[in-house]
Length: 175
Image 1 (spheres, rainbow, N blue to C red):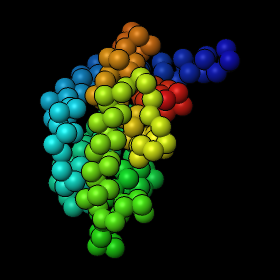
Image 2 (cartoon, helix red, strand yellow):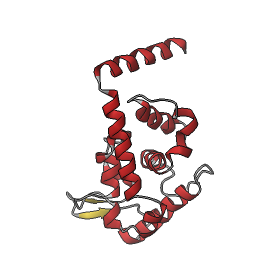
Image 3 (cartoon, one colour):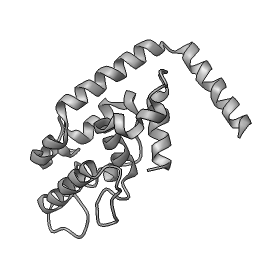
Image 4 (cartoon, rainbow, N blue to C red):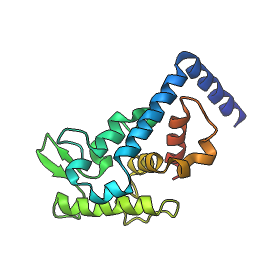
């Protein structure tokens, strides 16, 4: 374990020597503030599917957490399935879990599940919640909306450009 930690220290020091850490931290702080002004528990309660989902273009919640806020921890890669509901431009149709008859029914359940996730932070969610297996979206949402509760004690003292990435990766493995 000591060897791994030494390697981690080496790479963090190397990263910090090659990157303007203060600029990255400032940008991350600005993004976090912008995110928290746009999105909240109350916002989820009124959010529409078109304001949430990828695929129709524009600035949506899913676009925000996957593409725009990568300085706060990247969830890029893979496919849009991680967002549970999205519009496929190739198929020209909404993609959503099979147990629902249409995208609006699926959205009502997913929106309710987001609200449960946020309201019951720290209590966990069960497998009936659509976000149960969507670790990237679940983790990024909790990190951005509940940052002080999510990682305050553990990562609060870290003031490096990598702290946001470390927090994101840590909580992917320890939800």
